[in-house]
Length: 330
Image (cartoon, rainbow, N blue to C red; front, side, top):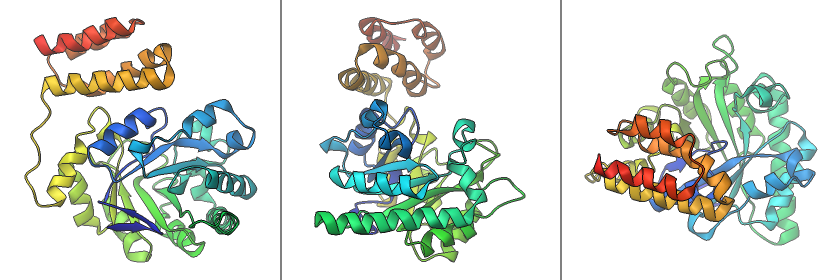
């Protein structure tokens, strides 16, 4: 078993939090194929405080995807504290603070990766979260929900400070830190700096989760070996490819990885994913969300480019499923 605070997980491969992607259907698919821990989409502390309906939807957890980590974002210690205490009435395993999101609308509010420019505030936010978690555990007579954080290498190439930020998180009582090896300015371009992840691992005693450029099971295992990190967090590599966890798990155990999924298997899982999306979000939203998932599932398949062009105008669930099934006969 691998530990994150008092949370035990079965292997070192985690599904990263991805806005607009890691909803309950996506998390369930990855969990069923070996993801040891899955994360929700980012949850706004302010949205939670003010009772935003969309925020409540993001917090839905199902039995088949546990353990689940809630990921929150914000820059006010009191809002962070409120969110942490609220979560003690829910079924999440731990709470992760986002300090790495590069999206402009998040950064302009001083949240996400903008926090990398304020190490003292990083310390204060984690302190507030840890204190709130301890207080809530006492009040509820339950175990403490660990507080972790996800960061980037730094703000830009001239300000690489992941080691400093990780030390602040550790000093504040954080149970682990996830490190994406790119700066905020890089977004998802260039190459993730795995050597920096190794340096963070060497600088702190809490578990370190490596993230960035994991697109195969082999990459995930190599991340562990080359950086010495405790866990590997898979993000874009899981898009349309929940089987990446099966591959990583087999290689980690020294077993022969399963064969790549056939077209028939891809279509079967696409239909499963779509059906689940409809049950959770209704037909209208599910059709539109499944369009992007279909582009990921079918990348590189014969006839998929033409299919992707067609499905952008489809609004009927049955018609979308027929497009998926048509791939089998290409």
